Length: 344
Image 1 (cartoon, rainbow, N blue to C red):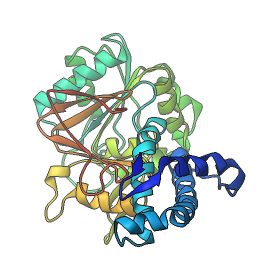
Image 2: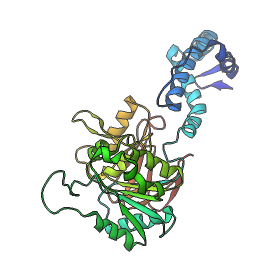
Image 3: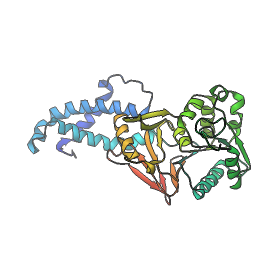
Image 4: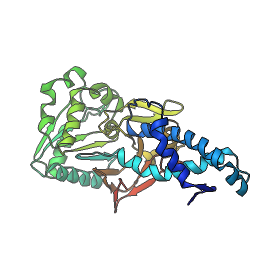
């Protein structure tokens, strides 16, 4: 069977190059992003080798069919390899939690959506008797107030709302002192928790207070033992690798996250943007800086991830962005009322 534009070039020639690969490949770099970049490096080298071989062996055959230049050979080989390799790439580098569950909120949850998220978190944590920890640190109105004026926010109010949905063992964990956050005594409640609720507010506060501390390590450990973490707005951003936004120009990394989901970049409040589309800007950034998957979440909407199984709570949409799957649009748009297997 031929290869697309070079139909007369047999698949045997591709096989010959692949069989010779162990003998001809140069050393590969070690890459901190792991499988995705390692694949891209191997892929680029294979393209060069295949282009040389297929150009020499198939030039006359391809030319007999058309006047396509050498670049056309590369194009048809590219399409062939991507068709074979793309599914396995994504199967090997999941951006969703590999253990436990994560709920990502887009901010400004209406009461009905809040209650649905709270009930789901309690259920995924193991039921009403599960220990749940609230981390309200990002909220600037929580004492000591970070900025602004007006009434403060008492985390006890949020505790009462979770208890109204059935939770019986809710603890508040809060500091803005990074040294305190890195002590064994402070993170003790997280060691026995089955669920965590991280509020919205200032993303940079969470970065400065908790990134690289015992808190971040205990959140990862909670997922590893099958727990659940909900992050809303800034809390959702913190669960990913970094926050994308205007820097002020161009669109890029504004704040680093806690990397609980190290291959995800979460963009909440997506439908509240004015004059730009966050999913479009995120796609453009990821084309130039490949690695994570972008997740743009509308307000009053939450994405529930139980491993690769996903569903949506609320009234908006969730856009999944990965230029390796679709270079022109979000490769998948999720809405409430259906479930998805993200590994497929």
